[in-house]
Length: 258
Image (cartoon, rainbow, N blue to C red; front, side):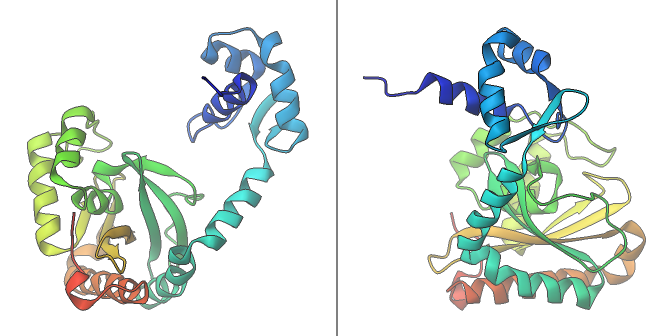
């Protein structure tokens, strides 16, 4: 027996349409993307708007409402990971004058959970809640490297490695080698692979089971990289190690385990 509520299913489909590249949509645009008529979805749109899950502006376009921010905060408050990580990210950001991030793998994308700003060089203004392709970011590559081999292979055969800059890894074989190096060395680098002029460094965060639960990263201008490479890598790895121990990881578990 199918217990799916069709109206709720349609509401979920509508909400899923809103993303970083489509933050505002009209009723007509929503209907077209869903393959239906605007008149059919108006009641759902009105209900979502009344409940503050959607907002409607003067141009009659909809965007996600503040209710999502409220609910997201409730979820984040329940995540020990998020709570514990903040103090480490803040120290990392301030000590190295960098912007520090916490992220998890969401599907095959990296989802940013938190940022601490320690530098005026902010390359993406609103990053919390943003998801980016995993293969071109330091956070994402760290998390991909933590996947079991069969999941990595599934990713490498299915994902289209679109170039974001001239430095983006677009060869599955090259990415496979890179993920192996990350597992061996315990850190990842995105050398202008997602954004030109920006270098990212990331390391895995493990829990008491020895599983990679998340990753932390920093982003810096390319101009700082050559003079501070070793120091920054060491600091990121040390910060990830301290955070992992706070989450219950033992010394021997502070490494990649599938």
